[in-house]
Length: 634
Image 1 (tube, rainbow, N blue to C red):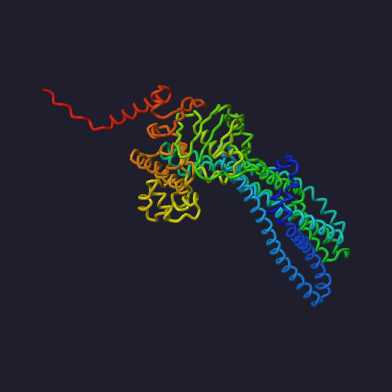
Image 2 (cartoon, rainbow, N blue to C red):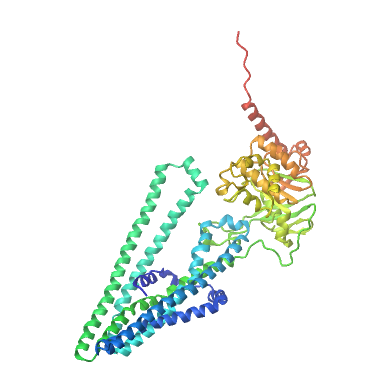
């Protein structure tokens, strides 16, 4: 083992040793190793054989000198030299085969863990993603998974190889000259104690470096995405941004210099102790060789073995930290896998029947779950805030959406409208009451059939950083170009797509930022129309459209909603005047219900909201109208 590898082993964060693993972690780790048990066994056999070859070469060197060079027997010299060369070739081949097994085991384990974590995270409720930090999730799929797989590759092979090497090297040295061997071992404390101290120093510096790099990376991520760059352009001060980034980069630079110098001191110290031990062997052993109590070949073999002794000693002295580091990585991965999704498919789930869709919301109450129910403190940037449940958000909400009808939800912001649509789409489950679609309680419906029946367009349309075709295909895999064109025409956006240089194969950019807000929204509606669900949920889907686009899209929606049920959130009341039923939501309750005419005539909250909006719209029209020329004064 090289001095650099020994230094890396000692520089692991020593705080890991203080961690107490969750019960059953080790057993679960071996469970992941089970599919690779034959490969691991073959890998360990190769590691042991390769470790044995470490001792073989110095012993052959002894025979080459004592039995070949000194007696001037060239035949022995040639045979042993060829044998040393053969061992070198065999060691190289073994190294390649070991690497193949190591890669197969390690990459296979990474694949297993990543696919499990990715699929499990995607099945978490939307509340999970509102709290978890994206960077922390990416780290679990990246660094922690890689750290976990090292338990079966780097740590396992290093521990077995170093243990076997150490036993064989010490045994061979004792057999060659036990007095010199004991003298060499007496220097071990002078080697390990400073190394351990330096290792703790390096661990602390490495921890600080990771924090500084994470801070620097977070700042770049926030500024380099489209939304962040736009915010900086509009509100940022270039000089301040440069100065703050320079300050953080300077911190990374300074600690990098300190780490480099500490490692250099460490490297020199390890080399010095090893050199002193070698000098002692040469000095004492040389005197013994002159006196005839030790052969020259034995002296050379001892020095060669000594050079291979301190690396395994250093690594094994820190093996507990290495193992714990790998197990802690496993534990962090298991922490995510053990978080049960709050919204899950029940064992007795059945499909929602097809055909016209009827929605029944019966005496529903709802409170947003506490942080501990849906998230992990370790995935949140600030986990010391209020982690309790939200308190009542909806109270005794009941209504029905008849097949083919349009029901509108209106009311002040924060009243609970979006929460109601979230329950209908089963982003959450109600804490009281029941939501049914075509008679099936959503808690007992298969998620795939629910997704087929319910289509949602949110207020902030999200598009993947991919082509228009790929974004549409996400809703209806395998859809033809003609079907996509029909959906785009219905959403009043085909003329835009047709005019683009690459048409459907145009890349929309990060979160669709190459398009305007209205264009993104119309593409999202086209995606919904291509899916063709029986129930359409619109959460203020026309919010980002200008008047002309809104009227065009409204006509398209009228056509698309024909023979379909619809649940629509609207802040602009003029868009839902023709709804079959308007529900006025306030403080988590339905306080009024009826048609537009009925609610205006009732003179309640709806009438007040409508008069306020009508007055604002009329004022806006008058302010933008052409002024009438005043008559000339006489």
